[in-house]
Amino acid sequence: MSSLSKSVEAPAEVALTGVSRRFDETFSLQDLELSVADGESVVLIGPSASGKTVTLKTIAGLFRPDTGSILIRGQETIGIGDKERSEIARIGVLFQRSALFDSMTVWENITFRLRQHTRLSKQDAIEVAGEKLAAVGLARDTALLYPVELSGGMQKRVGIARALADSPDILLLDEPTAGLDPIMTNVINELILENVKSLGATVISITSNLYGARYIADRVVMMNGGRIVWSGSPDDLDQSGNPYVDQFVHKTADGPIIAGLT
Image 1 (tube, rainbow, N blue to C red):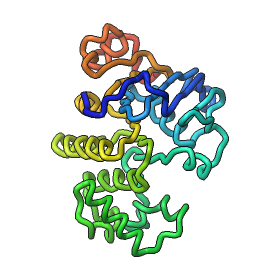
Image 2: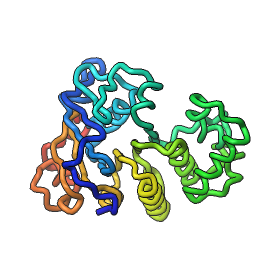
Image 3: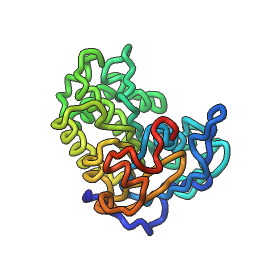
């Protein structure tokens, strides 16, 4: 278990109640209930199309749920703008495959949101980007490069640097180690742990790497069909007694998870 452990009985930093979201005729989220304490690191696991990414994007305000409530620090966030949301809490997001802007330099990518909300000069922005790059183990002059000039592992680090740019209170990480080799996966997990510990941030992340989940999580939440089907300690994953978790952890075809239909 990570060194970020906090009591789950602490006041919720993020609380979703009865959250549902339908796309066309299919539910991505169905009456979702999720509470995350201040400083807690929660990892979402589950099969494809189980609602994990939609959950993160809904918390970030990129999707608006059809029903339900999303409280951040006790304040309702559904229907408010990005500026109002940032006044409640700073939220950093790492998207799948980093989602860097190809036409922008690394420093422009990292400071994109900062420059939207502040009058940050180019020189100051480059300095901020250099500090964040150093925090994820990259040379400061990487700030002057373009994403196409970076390896996959470097792009992932830049994505993390962008998520950390304004020292967020809440960090949302979507598959931070996807597509990386085992060594780089360990490096990224360690960087996440170090930076989150220094920030004291609340973290909600998604991963298909169960080793990574065990390493960075205080609590693991299993999703299936847009709902939470299990929540518990990383230490309990192997002996959860839950059929969904057992099937997912042991990678078996037999169980309640139906490939392609969840």
